[in-house]
Image (tube, rainbow over all chains, first blue to last red; front, side):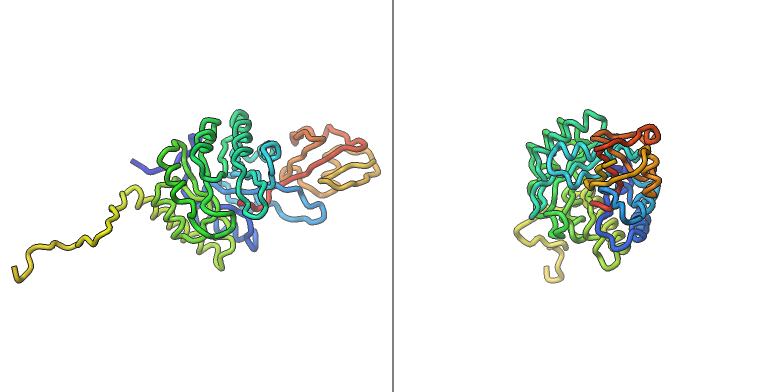
Length: 256
Length: 66
């Protein structure tokens, strides 16, 4: 059977989701998304700067990508809902990554406000992917409220610190029925692979690719790591053991 | 006439529709979303709304983000 990630009934071509922030040049975004064969791509919504004639980011995102605007900048459910509705009015689909942050030092999400926003937006037929602190109870409530997937953080946004929340994410993978996507904090391909080996359905990476010396090369490395990690998960990892266990037969020596 | 556009006060001389304001600002209506007095305005209606004193406009578009 083909191993395919499905979110809200849509087949997703790539388990590496890519964020478009912090790239040194917009042209690189096109190369990154094309070479890594990206499917779901995040963008943010901001006030237009009336004094500069900056080119629209959508011109740099290949047509085959699924656009997932985030609600970054929202400090509560109400602001997040407002941003989501504005994003949908752009005519670029109904996917939304809910991101509600009221903590400016660690940029940790507000799970309670995120839940409130999810309840409202799912009823308005958005495909809702909430970014959250890994908490099983809230994750269950998000699914109940209509979240199409849940996106626990690995470490604070942009910190490149890796999957620090491993034990909690593992529990969510085991219990939660919708896709679990690690979003934020993944700094290296090996960390993305770790998420996938654990059984995550996908990972979302932005900073680690955008700020690499060669973002295109790094996006390929991440894409391969995600594929390898997924295959390892599906293949079933070997058991852990405290003692050494010989890989070669222990009988039939010459002196026997 | 005084307006608030993206949180800043602006004065415009003539009566105009939202669409006319956008062309004056050289903004492509296909790449932006307009919130007019807290209400999202579909593109096809931009031609039919005339701006008036103390109106509040938010003009937003997509940027890079994670």
